[in-house]
Image 1 (cartoon, rainbow, N blue to C red):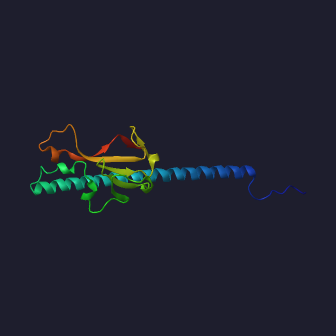
Image 2: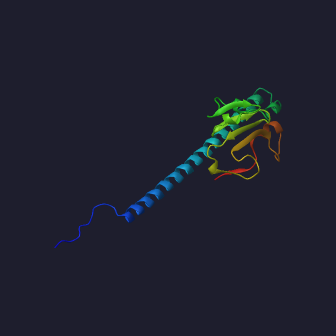
Image 3: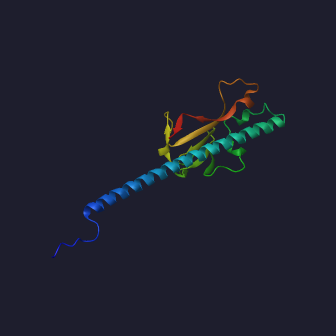
Length: 169
């Protein structure tokens, strides 16, 4: 009785199915990695902005302690990075005009012409503009917030405010 011997190994169908399964797993992994990178960038930007706001409040408090509370007008449109112990990672400095080639993803700079702090996005896939502003950057400016009851407007309402509308996905 000579029967057919089955050949060891994968058939073409089994190979195709394993390949498809492997491709789906790799795709899912890459999607999860990209999502985590976008979330890490969001957290990094939010923590940096909180630090900048804290530095600004510290400067205002110092001026109040030194009886210079009315002397905060110079902060409007100023560079909030100067109130940090060290600049944020990727900070390029102050520029009147910046060469686009210098703008690496994840970099910060201060636009001294407009008085705005700018972050050039690294993971723009996790970010959406809700206005017509540049899609690959976020801008902030030290300004007086509108609509607040103020005892001392320069102290009570001065903050680092985002320019434009955006959301993290």
